[in-house]
Length: 113
Image (cartoon, rainbow, N blue to C red; front, top):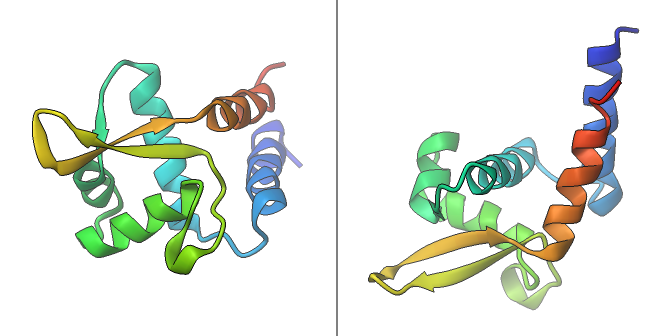
């Protein structure tokens, strides 16, 4: 198995440790948020929806699954926090939590030789 494929499988497996049924969209939402934060770009739920090519409701569900409290008062993964945009109160800005930054470092470590 190639280094690349093996490491991609390890990354997916890290997400599965958090949630064996985590959808690919939710994994992509986390990675998108993390990359934008890494380069200093604020991320809104709207941005996630555009990236995933899904409705705003679907984007919200994917982001919510990554927060401390997911839908229907079920615990989430606490990887991101969603805060009100002070410049536009109807928007939510998304940032990584400490746990989210730690997960990102673990994921990145799979690609270092």
